Length: 487
Image (cartoon, rainbow, N blue to C red):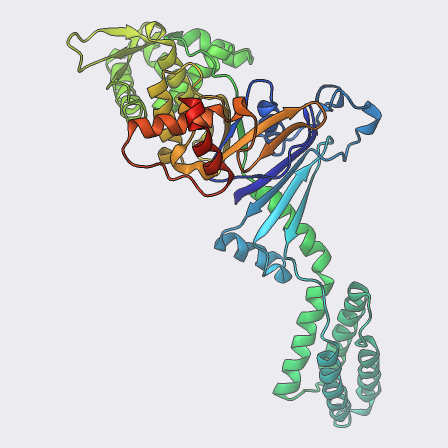
């Protein structure tokens, strides 16, 4: 399932965001305090990795409104999702009349419940003339067959034929009609079997078709409920990241294991756990080998882990070619980083690297650990790369565009995080006293809101002779008309 659009209402600074189109990556631009973060927080609440929970009216309901206005079903999130061909086939197998459904919807309010919908779902219907035509041919055939059976079974078979004839008269209440039709069809089948009566192949086929239709309608209510539950089960998880916890360059493995066993691991130790997950290391195994004094095996394991992490970091970190190595010192493990191509190769602890690199390293470790095995997870990033150098921000954006299969929705006010080659992915958030936070799919707003977009286009043109392909309409027109302002 791919997120096609979402809308946030009745949440913090947001009365009604308007419908926000979503693409592979979606960049929401806006000045500080425009409510960008609230958009991500609300969207995250639909299907968070940690599980669905109630929202807090005191904390989350718009402050300028009375609390008694907030109910459990007060809408907060409404989403629209596109189905691929395999998902459409799965849905049709559950609910046959969903054959034309290409989009589904899901939403939630303040209570810990969600609702779903199926766009294009066919209505329950009966072909009255077809039913009557089949019945007119089946009933006389059954009675004709009854003339050929023993007298003891004849009366019962004729009686069930009449009951079948009456039960098959269509009714506006399709569900109730189908329940009666199923019972009548079953009774007719039993009577025919008891009398050892048979119909012609053509008449038998018509009877089977009536049975299939009656069962499909009778089962529609539970099938519809199952289809809606299927939608909820198919929803991708949302991973929301607004801060990237520190990842210490030196970690006490023994202390980590003890605190984890007590359920008291610190944020830094949980980051260390994610690092081990990415590197393919088992802290308990390293500690067991230490107690056995098997240093050779320990070193082999961390050497391999260093190579794995190095290859990944080099793929995504373009500032310079770096090497990551893990060093074991008794119960301690150090994360060391060096520049192997430098004039002087100096290896330093991760703690001594630049803040930008530490942020990027923590970002990579957190993302890889949280999304491995969940390729459909949707990543919600609040101001990613805020502490990175401008070129590193551009590399981070390229990483989003080329190295992730996940959909990504992120907020930014940095021109270096604006996807100038994909301006159709840009949205702008604005804040007004009356309307609250609103979002435009056409990148509309005041000068400060649009400044990152204008600056990004100007910088892109200065750095390349190739023209930036801005789509026609508001984005391109506004950017063109205000490039002089940027300069």
